[in-house]
Image (cartoon, rainbow, N blue to C red; front, side):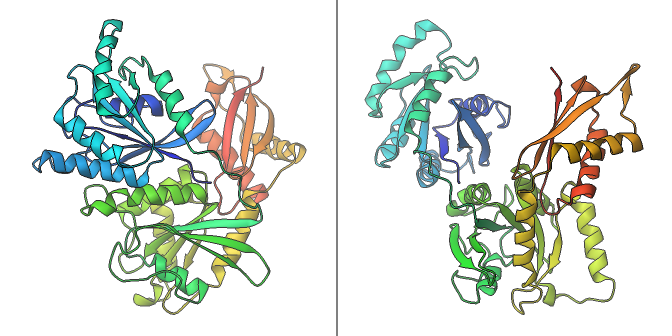
Length: 436
């Protein structure tokens, strides 16, 4: 199920990125007291009162030489198109400006919930100055100091109150998967080839697909799938059209709704640096993953080509070594029949449950094979391991001291678990906790 989206908008230099970082809980957006610093869309997840949401910082200025008002309109347009709730940030130090009024008029016509945040209210004496902002016609202004965190709790309360109600989970027996990748790698053509009919417009022009498109189908065994096509993701700085500015956000939302992600690479173009970034989105989201090398029929091959590609992929994508690789052609339908079986198998691995007794036997064997590390004469002790979640499979390891668990030893334990239980296609999470 896709998370609701909160967009932070406003004119330059009112503290949007600082507020974004405060809500996200980490310093993600670049913050500098200069107009136009945030040039690209920045995305993160936020949580308040057990409600999770996607957060988008729309403060970037694409071209600081362009007409000022036109840039603000573009930012507001993006927010209107994508957000469930919009936070308009203004500056309490400067009061209402023409640019604030311009954005407010656009948002007023949007017919979406708009929360007005008056930023830079750093001391109580300044709170009396916020009432002028009622003139924007967007309801109650919320005084905040994003630098000091003052008032952000009240602001988040207001945001949560406007989020759409949580939908019930879709039927558990349906496997949802999406295709992601750079523009023009053949995602829509792959969907058409898998379905055997032109359910999605396919074009060789990069960026044809603007929206995520859901298609439900059933295979010969009766397994039901929902396939989600996504707009191609373009590297930051290479995005020119206004509609492309939020294609990454739509792809991120598609990943969020998916159980399994097919990372599509163009065999003619080879692996690009941004392919690794795109795959990282799915990996960090804990989704199942398949690396699909498309247009395999379009390149010259010899007896070593497959092995060379596999070696290169494993070298370039070391963090997703668990992901299977398949070489396909949407045009000739070469090896496409393998994809549904792979997806089904990965879904089974994602939902696999391991009994604590068997799991602890594997961990103890691993410790016997490779003793736990020591630090300053103190040795790590592993008391107990148990599985606490699935999709992705998540395990908690109880130890004497958390800081004694070196990341390299944690990786060793993950490899031992994978060898014992075969979690191909899905990330697994190992959490270390001190036994109480």
